[in-house]
Length: 306
Image (tube, rainbow, N blue to C red; front, side):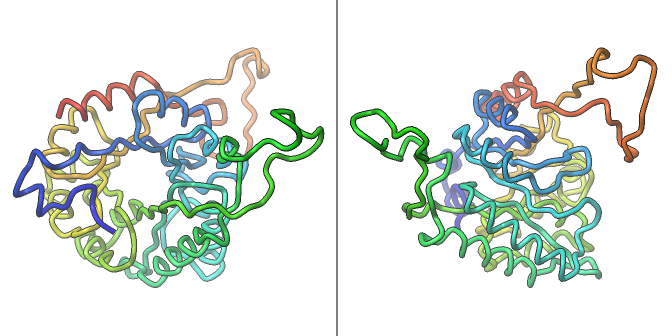
């Protein structure tokens, strides 16, 4: 797989290089719509963003895909580190197959070995599962294909009680595979990104081995990852501030990823006044994140102006 524009051609003619894409991390179908309408090129869909994100539910995936924006679903069976046992890998392979069959445009995966090196075997399994599920024999009509499905019955009327979504094989759609920020937790992020060559992945999401892209730029690691990535696209993400965008574009990244979120609190009338009841987690149970349209638009503008 190749970059949106190869670095070789961009170095020969900088004006020929496409503008970096904008990806927004969302946790709801409403967030996907907000990102779409704000100018995002695609979304990464996950649940529990406050935990770093985990695999979204089947219903959430179907609802997000139905919005029409390209959906890239996170595949992460639990929070915490990225060294997985055999049972966890099996669960994620199953999740990949289900997500692809639900019509996502891509999956977001990653794994490390206990020594902190990239788990290339796990990544090969993930890629194989994704591409196998994307094969024509597995591609069936879903909610995203309503416009493609001819009505049943006479004229434009549908037969009462009949489903418009009869299973049928459709033309395969290109599937993209992103390796997530597990590479930033690797013992050697540069070696981890270099090891992606030949695995069949489309891009890598990275902050340059730091907590934020700003720190990754300052350390010089993020620009170094752009150099060693080869045909793997580099998407910068992790604590992105609008002021970071010009430097990220100058560093040659292919995309910028951010959550563009705001906190939303539970209305006082929806719980007993003055009473806090723990629901079994240390995280707050009275607030959640929503995608902010103004932040998405500001990120789009920053990228367009960089």
